[in-house]
Image (cartoon, rainbow, N blue to C red; front, side, top):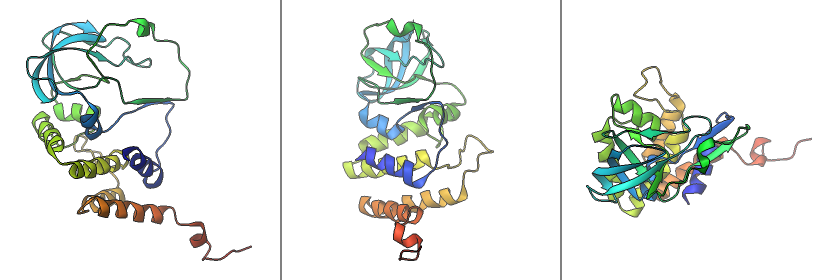
Length: 237
């Protein structure tokens, strides 16, 4: 269901430029549902790619004090040996297996450290360092634009505590927010697109999933009218 919604938003509501290489990351709402652990950890044994962490604030999953070996993503076009140092605290959405996808139209050599296999408990795309400006880090790594760590924790725990219908609505709106060029509060120069801002506000005003779905379909029909409506309802030679 969520994948279908993502496709609808991507194809019908927006037109994004294609990049040579890009990581298609889930929204933080999606990551919250698929992650085994969500929370803040502290590195207790330094390492590259894999390090040992202790849970200091659990939002989902392992309790405070639990020790976890967590592996970070190795980027063939970026940090090929991401490291964590003792004492560093980071925000983590960790899973048994990654949910992000790599889309690439460019060639590249093998990453030298792909052969390096260290047993891990969980994996994540990146451990997000807890440092200022935290709002900017959350915007870049999590797509969250509503404030700092305390505000983000409140949003995540509220989402996880919602019933299935409440979560589904927020997942659908997250797909819209991810693909519409909305303003970024952490970037004063980013004003977004006025029409897309109004569209998102209209979608957000839906009272339930059914109404939200109907609004999505209505918008899709406006952007992609049936063939017969483009020529006045009849065939023209």
